[in-house]
Length: 603
Image (cartoon, rainbow, N blue to C red; front, side, top):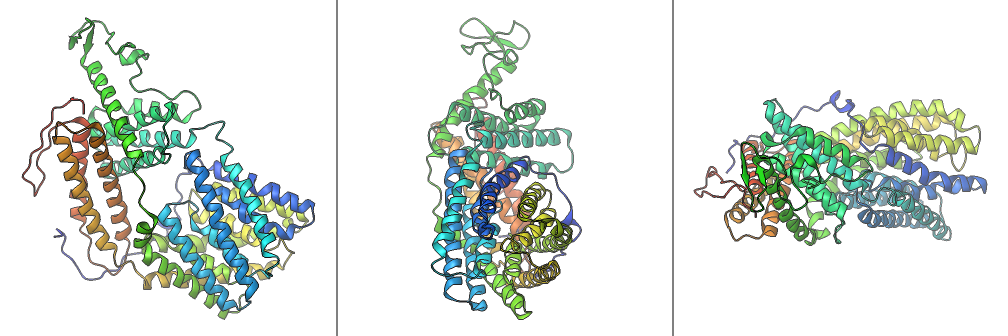
């Protein structure tokens, strides 16, 4: 039963100013920004040279796929980009065929809304993003309202496919230079997050719970990145896995962690040089010779090894860490062999979000048509871009979208005279907007929308220049209509199962914790079983926090069992610490078992 008393339906305050607050830029903001420019420029310039700039929207559909999968290892990125390109081509094919068969705007809006719902659900289930479904929805929705014949569709699809292949090559281009770049970045983020938590816990500062959750999320993300490729790991990736294990150890024992060393490792990992080895025998400060025997001089607190050399307490602890790393790598290899959950099971919980998308996009498009709009897909795409994990986040996205678009149309009004100087000026303006959108969107969605809006308006001028005033007016109206109708649909279709998902996540964490504790208490447990149990528990804790955060923003639901969530997290963290340090477990509330362990023993 919940420890929190259920209350009646409640309404939450919706943020306005907070939704517009700028954050720190992404660590790799320049990668998607440069990639999209490199993917868009050659096809567009080639078409301009051939005098067929009117075909550039189709090549741009394929080029925009270069925005995806920058956080994936290159082996996994190759597959993800291929699937994104195929998904883009599939949506574009449906749109082109629909546009060829009918010019009924209501039918086309309906098709666009259904496509948007499917694209949203699949991208959320497969965690493809950013930019997730928004780019795919923009491409397919815009194509619905371009005059088309069945005979033209294959050629247009071929252009998009050719540009998609070029985008794939652009996305994979850094692989020869930095073959482990994504894994390095994820590992560095985990080390920095662990260092931040260690400093917070050691200093007794406020916000320790938030730092701990952020650190566990970063470690979990690092493991997801490292385990995304299921083939035999390279030496570099094994070394990165050892560094993530050190981050886990720091989370389990923040008082014993060295934040300075964690940050030093993170800086070294981000570079292009050799990945630092934890406990490398050749490092003087580790106090170990290549044979693993201590090389420090005798002194207080030391003991003699079988080889006659002496090890102090720090060296023994480091030697134990090396043994734990070896055993954990066995478990990592076992985890890598586990098949991911089938797509169908991941799509089920996303039904409310899919219904929101379909209903909101359709109603936004219909409302735009009722107002006499020529491009109702602007309102449709605006509605599609709003839907997030919960109502609060959806509201924030609506505020960001409206503000960004309103500022963006002003920017377009200023840029349009320059873009209309000639085809080359138009292409250069489009490239600049592409770069600006990806460079700024990491700070806040509204800031990126300031460049996305003129980009979308400039694309409409590729077949021929149009009156600036009409474009600006139409965009403003469709933005307001799409944001208003889309948000109303989100309020109408609330995720009423969010509370039940929190309950299920709590049960999952409890079961994973009990399983990990049993495995840790069994002296005969294999290293693979111990590490797999710990990974499963860590994943369950991260999922619980994400589920609780998503449900916390929903309207019209019972009060969430927040006390149970906090207690479950605390109990899970203690179990995680015990599985890492092999320390005895105190009984948790509601249990009668006491788990014992010998600290320092190898799994």
